[in-house]
Structures are given as structure tokens and as C-alpha cells.
Length: 207
Image (cartoon, rainbow, N blue to C red; front, side):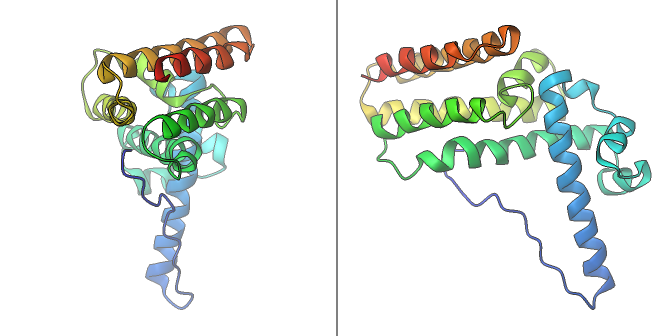
């Protein structure tokens, strides 16, 4: 997440090629299912995802979904990857044009609040929802969730270090804690007031 790269999917299709046509259909299925799975994960958890529920939600066939993914676990891992791509687009990329350190941190916080207010995911922040669900668990899905959280913390710490704060790791923890608390409060009570409070508290740390 520290190095922003394009997260656009390749959509190349050659009209006279059956192989490319199948690949394009497979890519479309993968994108559609991964996005829907990521959305479901924020309201019902990654563990709630099933091939049947995804087929019903997307209009795709169960066999078509399994042909592309093979297993339910592969769908869950793809959901994490899709959520990461969306997070990059919504939160990180818009802030990346700012100078490293305090200017970029302020922009990241503004983008994070905007990402929540835009209801990009129906259940709030994917990172908050998935890390609460997958703490102390093992396996490919847990590893993907853990890596995403670690990447976000590393990004905050890197920018705090650029800002010259005394305790980059500690302040990254504090900022993340404020944002997580604001997300939980928003989802529980339906109020967005705490989003601004979390941003303001984080800005106090940045100086």
C-alpha cells in the first residue's frame, strides 16, 4: 500500500478469439463475485460467504463461480484483494499527490472519512470488519486479512516517520485506534459525528 500502483483490471478482449472471450467472461465473473463478497463481508463477515449466496446476489450460476474460483476459500481471499484495490483507489491514491509526511497524512485522514461517508462498503470499513473477525485465526484468508492491516499500519508509520514525530509506531497505532473506534460507533449507532472526532484527534497527533 505504500507504493501506489494501478489497480485497474485488464479488460482486453479479442473479438475473434474464443479463448480470449472465455478469459474475459472469467475476469468479469471474478470481479463481480469478489466485489459482492467484499461487500457482504462488511455486514455479515467473510465466514458468511457461500457460493449459493453469491450466486443469488450476482445472478451468476454456482457452477460458473466455482469454475473461476474453485473453492470458497479462494473467493474469500479474492474478496480481501478486491477490498484492498478499492481502499487504494478511495483512500490512498487520492492522497498520494500530497507531499510525504504531514500533508499526506492529513489527506489520508480526509480520504478515509470520505470513504466512510460515501458508503463504499455497506458495513463500513472492510479492514476494521475483517480484522475483528479474523483475529487469532490461521490460514490463507487470515493471512490476507492480516497483511492488509499490516500494510495500512506500515503506511501510517512511514508517513509519520517522514513527518518527524517522536514515536511513529505508537502514533500509527493511536491513529488506527481512533479510526477503528469511529467506524464501530458509526455502524452501531448510525451517527457519523465520530468520524470527524477521530480525524481531529488524529490530526492533533500529527501536529
